[in-house]
Image (spheres, protein in one colour):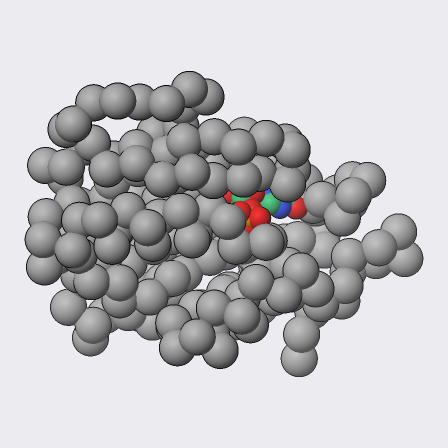
Amino acid sequence: MMKALEEKILKEGEILPGHVLKVGGFLNQQMDSDFIMEIGEEIARLYKDCGVTKVLTIESSGIALAVAAGIALHVPSVFAKKHKSANMSKDVYTAEVYSYTHKETYEIAVAKEYIRKGEKVLLVDDFLANGNALRGLMKILDKAEATLVGCAVAIEKGFQGAGDELRASGIRVESLALIDSLTDEGIVFRA
Ligand code: 5GP
């Protein structure tokens, strides 16, 4: 847990309909540079002894955190591109991701040359909600025969359950702020 992130969410976050948290002022549209680097350093601290060779995320909102974590771990970061239609190129690994926030399925693609067989990959994202984004990235790692070291997200929406499901299946999932309830009455973090 990162107390400073919880405090920033309480101070600057906005609760939108549908249990959506808006953090556009420091994490999404506008990025607080120093704070993004602090998050990257915290992710690196958690995974520093795991032999990570690459950080992988999905465009666009995961990129800043993946770059920060990659800098702190001294490894490259890669982002999966999003497409609406099927990408038939044989040079990319693809997976389908359903987005509850946008109510549509999109395809993610990573060029094969950027995720090599045997690579030890850390998945990073801004939010973990229903887990579809991370599961899509895991499918890509499977296709690439790369190893999943674990996942790191800035904000986990614990009430949507996916983080605990992933942990129960043996995957390491680290979240820097874990929200158990997000309502008009306010935000409750997991103790
Ligand atoms: P999942 O695939 O785990 O359901 O959702 C993860 C993705 O949805 C994240 O990459 C994030 O961009 C977006 N997302 C999910 N919930 C929220 C939210 O409450 N606020 C924001 N800003 N993005 C969210």
